[in-house]
Image (cartoon, rainbow, N blue to C red; front, side, top):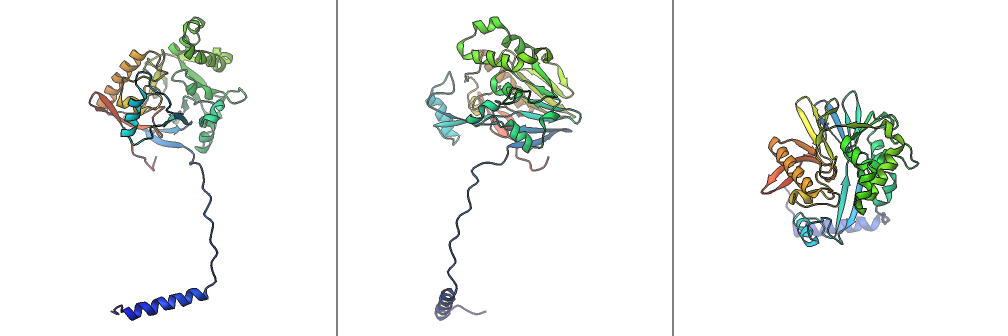
Length: 327
């Protein structure tokens, strides 16, 4: 073995300096341009023999000038965000329609914010469906959970045509009865008027072709409607089962920035129409999910919105399912 000596070090340094002097000066290379955007946002997983694809309709940025929770102060909300290592001056609201391939049917649950919302960072369902290799014309059934605009507005394209022209459209019977009732519209507070108007815009021309479904019924093989009312009068979640495996697609049992209501299940977002019933539904469902250790997907849970509910004292916590590179 040759030992390094002080003389060897200096000789090596001198040789390197001479070599550098004889080498033409290499021009500086500019850094590669930044991409500026994420990859398309969809995530696939299996439930038994069914293949499910969570499609992100986008993330709406919300400044926290005021509390997004109607029965909590902004400072209380910020304390939860701070404890979760999140910014306290802004939030992102996530939106997740789901495609279910049963092997015989291609089913879409909810349709996103629609093309008119692109300026808010949402309305991305068509782009992400295309990225996932799903043609809207191949959707056999569209199932709606409830009639808030971020769930039904994607039923129509920018020119007013049906976005899923070959699909049967299925809606909760109680939701239909409420939002299509002119008397209910006249009695409703101002904040709900937009939903009545949007319901008429989306469904009016096809009212006689829409299928109304009841809770407890299997809508297509393996997909059963479950009563989770409170957020709206006909709000519905959907249990998807294949073989011994199941997932509950819970729509807006938690809404807005969903993790806030895991930490504080009594907190109410603006869209929780019957506050007391929304809280009762949330607690009952989450106690059941925690006991049964059932997989859950939430429309407003951060992407890819898949995981489990656990009890945490008098509240709950969401445990994300690990990202799986296989399907």
